Length: 56
Image 1 (cartoon, rainbow, N blue to C red):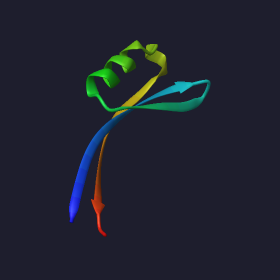
Image 2 (cartoon, helix red, strand yellow):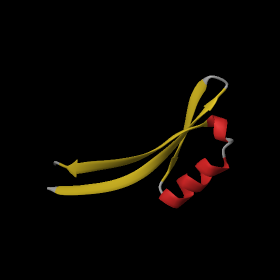
Image 3 (cartoon, rainbow, N blue to C red):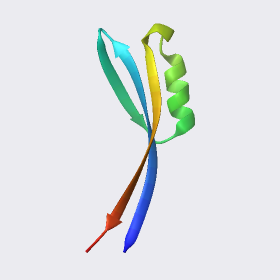
């Protein structure tokens, strides 16, 4: 059985009462992009780790 693990980051912000998000595969890039948002729009930066398995 083969496993593969990968990590990505999502930057979320509030725009016109809606939460928007964008995916990044580089942590520094995600944090830099978040810093460029107006402070009142910033919502969160999340780290996601996914594991996929080949089962057949």
